[in-house]
Image (cartoon, rainbow, N blue to C red; front, side, top):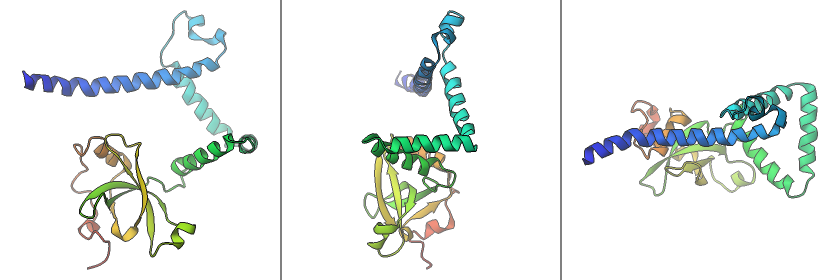
Length: 211
């Protein structure tokens, strides 16, 4: 009986969570339909609510915004809007912080979360998966001896929380795996592990220094 129960859970738990996440995402995005006039709402046009129309509208708005800001007029409009938000007290502090993070993570020129590392944590005899977020510079680097990198170590099974600190670059191992693969390993608590042949040759020399 126990064996059948566990087998059934292995089938239904991933399916149930997937359906729940999709429903939550679609329901949230459907809120964008409130931007449309009442006359254009699906309830008025055809008499029923069609789930998922908000997803299409959200994608259209995001893509349209991207196309608009690619031309001179759009860039001027964005610059005006950006300057306006920067002049509003309290809102300015939040907007600048969020924009700086989003520019770092989403920009094609950014290096945040582009490298997956192994770092010694939480003690010298343990290794943890981490993401390189930056290279120490400016005031921070002036107080450090050698080259340091900023790393983010996510917690499991929720990778949105974690710890951020600087570690000596020579004490890290850069893995030849994608961020997606590393996140799957973290979320699954190691059940879904990276392939055995993805480690670079430097893995046998954790300090990165020649023997």
